Image (tube, rainbow, N blue to C red; front, side, top):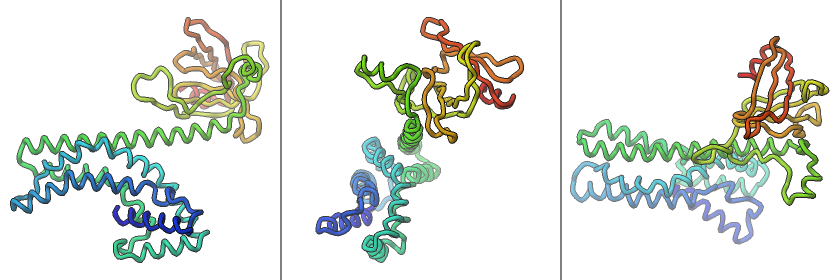
Length: 323
């Protein structure tokens, strides 16, 4: 961490005097300076007191002295989220800059020649913090196996619980970020909301008429949770018994069902045809011959607001949508 922090410092100094200004240091070194600061604080609060106690008193290392560091884990686990989330882009960006920028290639070669790099490639060194959180947990579990003092074991178990909770928080945050990215990409494929006359609506009301897929799911108690796509595909559709059968593209999310019309053959540009339906507020019935199914969205008063017929190409496809 110290080596990467120093390399980042040297890189920024080069930019100050006019070199490599077209390279984004945040995409190369991510938040290494922040990681170094927090790990230095952890070392001073936990590791150093444990080492000094052992050296001064001539006794084995006392793992209970690590508690002061892990008690403050809520202060520093979020910086690991930032690092891990940006690592893939960092890897791609560094490789691209090495191919396209001769001076940056020289900087990387100089960095890798430093003794402190221990013959590591820069890209490999940039990956090092990825496993730190899980390694803390593994180390503490190894310590607790060899501990014979009940109070010490209890204290170490508390530290393990804290580090594992932080690891789960990192994983949940990364999962939500990944879902947000996918939903954002999907949102960009939706050209318009045609369930009503959007232009007329926006003339009358001071708000945008669109569907915000990236917002947290409604009716969920607790921390924000984000939807994911479970199934999507092309179906035939009729709006009511007398409606005309048309081709549509349907998307089933965690909490809603979306009926769209593809504007091209690849179905990568869509128009929303009907208001999104919350899956907890629909009635669903398969056709007797499994050729499709009927869906009726219900309002808050328990009254149906529409009746839609969906036709699938096969029995298996019908079962897939119903399940």
